[in-house]
Length: 408
Ligand SMILES: *Cc1c(COP(=O)(O)O)cnc(C)c1O
Image (cartoon, rainbow, N blue to C red):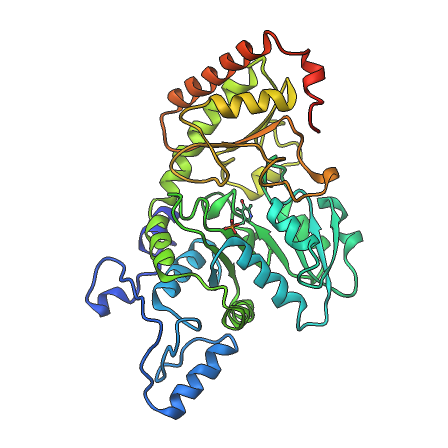
């Protein structure tokens, strides 16, 4: 018996077990929408197997690409291995993945209630509160999950570190409070490099693969790692509703996984330097980054292998200061999304968290930074340039306290 492989090795080799038999080395890209059927009987049986969430039978056919695609399946196998899960199911976006998770745990199970731990990514908060999926939602804090669970609760949703203020929830404790109710952890910010929710008892680890997994800002995708039984339920929703990932996206994601540990490690290193620099800046009222309070409850030590490369900060000078800073950086692009090779800066209250009710929305003085692969010194110089612009713009502006109330 050999020792388990290091995650760096898994990232490079996973999801490739059939390539040698195919006689190829690099990942193949299979774009067929339809597939030949051996005969009517086995074609029909194959369809039946996959429309109910199964895999294509050995002597059957993949039938149709809404049911199965080998390029997507290889990416799923790789992600499952990185997440220490039996299986994974990929979707057209992170939101399609979350929609399928909610439908699979409410629609047909008689459960109509979802417990959602805040803060959450604005889109997830919006989806749950929209009424579109016909579910009742109770929003709560991580320590209130047990009190929020009801007899008809089908799912608990939690995100950690959470978008945008990097709040940390204790995954094992949320799972314990949930009792038997399945918990989905949005693991987008941590990636499987830093955190494996399934090892902590979560039923599912969900990613907006658009972010770190893709890593290059050119794929919209989502993926859920889970056990095979849950994967069947999710594949059934995917086959029926059609929120599937295009094989080109899966190909790019699978290729991107090979550098995921390297990227996250380097981005985290730069983020830590930038956090240390931001803490001392007079323009910054508060820095949000995991572990800045020293991990008093030991949660980070129990569930994470690092603190990641997402930073949020609250500026003295409120909304006006935030507007000046996002307009003044040059290396940091003012844009939503995160986790790519290049650094981004954005204003959550106006953008990613715009649909969130005011009481749960981040402040108008908060900016979120996604640290890329540029040199950390260059990124610090870029932020410094923006802070200098801020000082220049505030010379003839109203007092800081007043401007802080411009929009809140
Ligand atoms: C972006 C994001 C999502 C939504 O993913 P899409 O791929 O944009 O649909 C979900 N959760 C988190 C934490 C995100 O950052």
